[in-house]
Length: 73
Image (cartoon, rainbow, N blue to C red; front, top):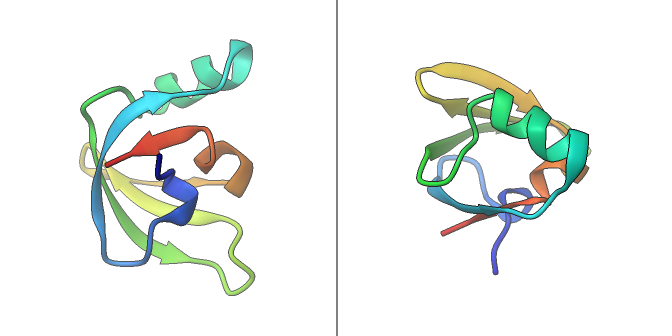
């Protein structure tokens, strides 16, 4: 299954599942990344970390390890 970490700049994806657990999963959900949410990848830092995405009308920056726990289609 593809994750948000694998997404390329300019792509739009839909969140399918959050694979993290505990505090990490709760933090991701609190940022608005829930099942069915559309995510647009705006920028990726030169070394690949962090990733800037647009979610629900606002920009959000997340780390690679967080993006890896977000499965997208």
